[in-house]
Length: 110
Image (cartoon, rainbow, N blue to C red; front, side, top):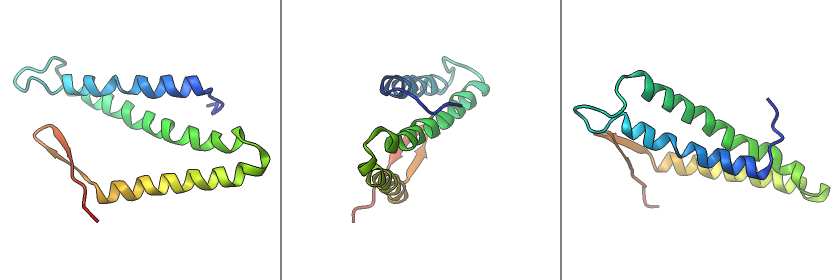
């Protein structure tokens, strides 16, 4: 797979991912008779969301150092790693709990 994506391709791909969230909601609402019935569709939408999350998160980090001048490449790579580390740290202290098909983000105040 080629990782040489344009800025427009990255933005469009990231926005298209947002369509998966309403599709997942339609698989669970209304509770008695969902608009998208079955167990396969929610698993497929969740799988697609997970795979595309990895792509949308890693492709910009791979491309960032090659898009700047030679003297700023190391700094750009370091900033990408620090940004990813802060995201992981935030997710550790702000776990998501599922309560009756609703995702609730609970953040621990420091």
